[in-house]
Length: 236
Image (cartoon, rainbow, N blue to C red; front, top):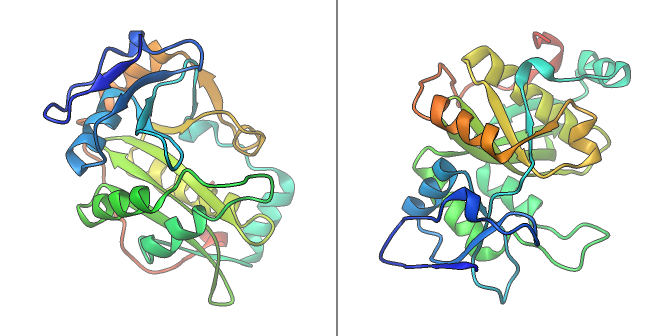
C-alpha cells in the first residue's frame, strides 16, 4: 500500500516499500519544505508530480546514475568544447534556469516543475543546497541545468537547451568540476537517451542506497561561485 506522509514528521517509509508499478512510487503527501526535501534526498527519494496531484515521492529501481570517471564525450562534442562556442557559469541565475527547465517540451502538455516546485527549490538554492549551471552563447542564456549537492553526491533534477549541444556542454562542464572537487556520483534518476549517450547507466536501488550511506556526509572542495568557464580549458 502507498504510504501517506504525516506533515508533522519528516520520516519516509523504507525504500523497499516502493511500488513496482508504477516503478518507484514510495509515498504521497507531506509538503515541499526545505527540511522535507533534504530529508528526501538523504533518504533516496525525490518529488515528482503534476498540478492537481498530491506531492508524490519516488525511488525507482533501477536508478540511473553517472560516475564522473565514466563520462563519455563524443568526437563531435569535443569539437564543440574546443571551439569555445559557449561559456558556462555556476549559480549565476538559478531562477532563470529553473524557469526555463519548467517550460513544456514540444512533446509534452504540461510540466512537473510547477510554481510550487520552483519556489521550493529556489529556497534550497538560497540555503546553499540547490545549484544551477548556465550555458551562454553571445551573452544569451541558451542552456542549463539544476540539482542538489549534498556531500560527494549531486542529484540532478532537470536541464534545458535552446541551441544544439548547449545542455550537453553544461552537463560536461559540471561533471568536470564535480570530479575535480571529489564528487563520486551524479544521480540522474531515470534513463534517457541524452544521458545514456554521456555515460549514464543503471544501478540497483540497493547499490544507490549504499552510495548514500557512504558519501552524503563527506565534504568536497567544490566552489560554486566564480568566473565564467571557457570550455576549451576543461580537463577531460
